[in-house]
Length: 469
Image (cartoon, rainbow, N blue to C red; front, top):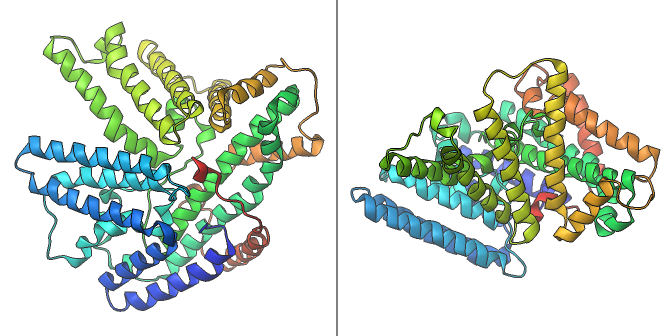
C-alpha cells in the first residue's frame, strides 16, 4: 500500500488514527499493540510468513546475544550468525516473485537491533519494552522504505506519556509534514516521468540538450520522490506521537560529496558508518598499532595510512551501499564511483588542510561541482545497464548527432523552476521546526487547499521511485 494512494489516505490512515485514539485511553501498551496490528495489516498479506520468520528468528537471536553477554567471543559469534542470516534472508526474499516489499530495510533494521542487544537484558517486567522489537521493525511509516531505525531513536520516547496520546500539536505538525511530502510526490516527482522514462529507454537518440534534460529531470525526480517519501514517513510517525530522525536535509545544497552523504538518506549513511566503515577503520588502526605504525593525522598523510585507514574502508562501504540497492553492475559502479569521489574529497581534506573560502563564488563552485558528481553517479544508478548509462553520458558530452531539445522551452522552464526550489527554498525541517510554520488559521486554510490539490493529483499507479531499489 502506497502512502500516496486514496486507499491509504482516505481509509487506512483515518481508521489507524481513530483506533489509536481509543486504545491510547486504555494505556500505552494497548496503543502500541494497536499500532503493531495496523502495521501488520499494512504489509501485503501474502508476505506475512516472510515477516513472521524475520521477527521470530531475530527475537531468538536477540535472546542469544543477551544471554552471551559475559562471554564476548560467544556473543560475537551469535552476532555474526545473526547478521549473516539477515543478509541471506534479504537475498532470498529479493529472489522471490513477487518480491516482499522493504526487505532490505527490514534486514538492516533487524541487524541494528541485534547490535543494540549487546548492552544486556532489558527489563523483562516492562510490557511496553517487550514490544520494542516488533514495534521497531513493523511500525508502518518506515516499514517499506525506511528510515532505518535503531533502538536509541525511539526508546527514550516511550517514557513520555504524550507519545501514546493523540494530540492536536502532533496531528497538526505531522499532518503538515505529510502534506508537504504528498505534494512533492504528486506535483513535482511524478510528472517528470514523461521526460525521464523515454530518455533512458532510448538514450542514443538524445542530442546534447535532450541528454542533459533527461539527466537533470531524473536527478530532480529522484530528489523530490525520496524527499517526499521521507517527509511522509516522518509526518505519519509524528501524527502518532513518534519522532523519527531526519532522513533528508537539502542534499543538493551540499558543498562536498562528504557533506552530500551526511544529507542524503541520512539513516542509511549512519547505519553503514557505524556497522561497516567504523569497524573496518578501527581494524586497520589496530593492525597498524600492532606493527608500530602511526594512526594519527600525520600517519593519514602517508600513502599507506591514507589507503588503509580511509580509502579501503570507503571502497568496501560504498561498494556494499551500491549492491544493497540491487545485485547489478550499475549499482556496484554507482557505489564505487561515489567511493572514488569520497576518496578524492578526503584526500583534499587531509593533504590540503586549512579553512575553506567562504566567498560566494567559492561556495557556488563547490555546490556546482558536488552536484555534477552526484548527477554523473545518478545516471549510472538509474540506467538498466552500463551501456545505457554510457550512451546517455556520451550524449551529455555532445558525442551524439544533434537531436531534439528536452521537449521544448516549456520543459526547460519547468526544470529551471524545480532547480530554484531545490537550491533556494527552505527544506521541510526548516519550515516546520523553524519559525516559518505555525498551527494558525491562515496556515490551516493553505494546507486545506494544498491537500485538495494533492488528492486531485493522485491517480495512476505511481509508486515511489526509491521502492525499486
